[in-house]
Length: 249
Image 1 (cartoon, one colour):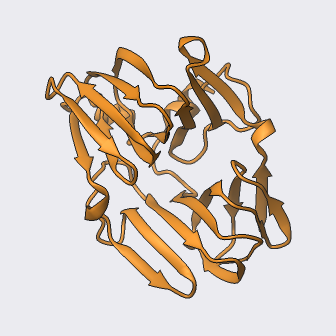
Image 2 (cartoon, rainbow, N blue to C red):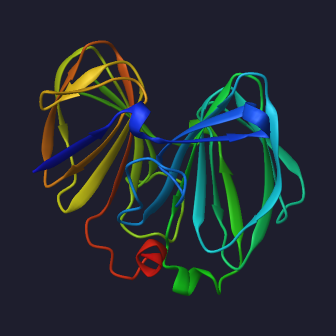
């Protein structure tokens, strides 16, 4: 059993355009600081927000699958595949399968918050594939109400998001205040970001923007002091290929 909780102050930090866009990074790039390095096939995870709105200009990507989840507000996105600006609202998601190369730009509008998460689909294969891109509106994702949980499924369990990276399940869970049992996937690493609220996991406390990495647990007890909102990714404990992070270690 292993539960590691990384509070906001121990995460890496980032910014764009003189601080017009700010970031907490539970999994940052090399050199970003923070206490967590890439693990499993998770390479990067940032919570980015902008109070007044700002643009990240067009820039390239290769190999990785890059997902953006709009937590609050709206963003505008441009990519070289479709050569058009598209708007995403709270609850929407997008994936860039960067393949052999794509460029994109993104504008975080005033008051917007997003997660941007990079995963490694096996770069030895993905770098030879053409890039592709999809937007998914919020209403396309299944929502399950059960045992005090409202679970929105982004990937896995018949959700529409398609990707090459193996062994991922991605969901957002809203939990009412109280004591609950949350089932986890055997043989997976569970990564949890607390978007809103305050809770404890098996007696260990988490405040808003805390991050948890859980291994060798099939069920945890969550005591929610308030209504809470959790973002959860299950990923492979043993990845069947050499990841980019392992190559660079």
